[in-house]
Length: 242
Image (cartoon, rainbow, N blue to C red; front, side, top):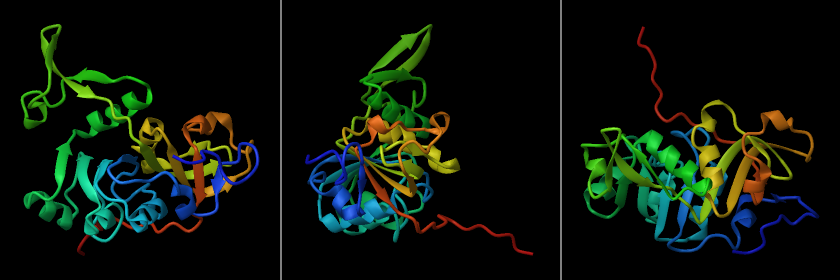
């Protein structure tokens, strides 16, 4: 999949832009884990570069699918996504249209289950049992097993070919800090990728981050790209009528 280190010397993992950071890593029919919660904490520059790369037949594990004109919705608009593994898809009209027309395969996963599937994959755990989804369509076709008289279903860990995540702050060794809501799925996605590329608002030299504040250690991250001016959109704006 190409060089895993950045163009700099030693352990420098900083790449000059999102396009170069994806060079040699993306291909058709790959499985990606992409961080974000709604439009918060999505790696917008990496998603744009993924779209511009032209790769197709993608399976994407992500909490949701963005909106029609931003985030993962951009990849749906260009028909680059074959399958979504998601827990919430209610804000994307094109997603709904493709799903109902049979043009997009969808694997619905409860939100906590999806997070745990990513975490398990990153921890080398191939599967786990959970009560969540028992007796619903989520459980159809899955192994059932009783523990202490309670039925559980088997869920498989997610091990992605490539993970794309968004951090608030990173250092040049790939250590990451997330901010608030962006910490929901990004840490799990970062660990479950065989290769992980991080997009960060702030990049500092190695050694400047307090080790106690690091959420994702740099050992999980192969490439970093700086995005000092992120476009932070609101998924759905709700205001009070006076």
